[in-house]
Length: 557
Ligand code: GLC
Ligand code: CA
Image (tube, rainbow, N blue to C red; front, side, top):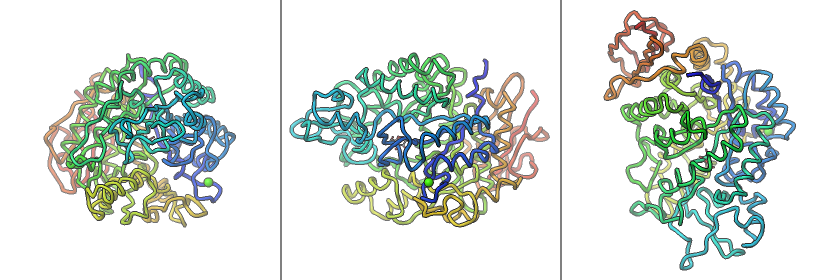
């Protein structure tokens, strides 16, 4: 098969609010990002995915957009964007935008109009329903706690919002809405952006009749995900989007698809689908959810390696030759990788971060590195509710602890320490000076105090740093079709300590062995005396694997 540019690329994700402040207002911005492009280039990434930078009331940090064609003033101006884009292109970096079109902000002009009456030009841009017996039209709960419906007295109707009330869902059944979306996509593509990460794109087609959703015992609302993901017209909408927009540009697309299976992924992003290029699947980041269903993702249980292997291996095997994986450990919605999948104990943190990077970057797919992951940044370990910023976390606390009394406050705070999205949103740790070099002012969100130990400045020139290890991983991939394209073979799925697999391509075999424990263990996969491509200890001791040891070998068939 011929390799597409996005198959050979590595993506670096920037959360602009927390990347680099340039004017001392405590908020990361576009000129700040422009200053830091050489750092991203140095790491070796090819593409930068930017979380939303559009005008927004920031109810959900930019995922509530009030104008798709302007820049959030705190991030700068359109000129600042153009300057950033030009500078990125000069350095050989491509820019991927976040496309958030399942919903807009309630302050978007379309919604401001739509809510006025049932007969204005925008009245059918959103999903409006009459009350049923004086209540919301169905039992749907929002992803951010509370009901998914809010009443608008002016229309005497409810509107649907799968997320916060400030994020009304667009009505994709309306062809005018779809044309608006295609037009704003072209606006950015014509500027030269190289594609989109599509926010919750598998939720855009709602089931006909909007039936009630399954409700866990004791839960106040139904769980919408099984009902609204991969809806009846999703294929049709994505196909149309491809015909009208995507196919006209040489770009990459990745659809965020909670709840989707490898089968779904092949349907929407298969190499022959003519829809999108790849999905962000949720299987490995959904492991160890609370067995008490009404607590959803909130838990403090460690992930079992056998489950993690099963999830990742399944996607590797099932998409091989049919689709293309996106490879990620974390992003702005997930806890920090090293804390979640290995350990942030200072004794092992560096080894563990390198081990995780290796395990993921040697798989088939396009790797995504979330800002700070390349430094081995950790969870922030907040202990108090008022330290949190994130709407999902704060709402969940109020709902589950105070309203539903489904869990006590102390336990919920433990769950949040483990799972909150805020773990990933603390400002980037550039150096050990005040506020880590992120801002000269008061940061919008507190820094992780460990920035004095973990920061870019101390790592960029240190050959043994996590940063330079990631650099080598990226470099290896860039120079190897075996790593990029090879097929995947899992080894010992029942081994709960070691994650090992082989990759095969044109008579060559790659062997990847990662010890996920803090113990020394013995494993023999025939690696003795083979050529080692990379590893996180100075040498390899063949069958002996020290704590969090990882090695990659090239075997001759
Ligand atoms: C996606 C985003 C998340 C946001 C949600 C609603 O999951 O990644 O940050 O809150 O969609 O737009
Ligand atoms: Ca700023």
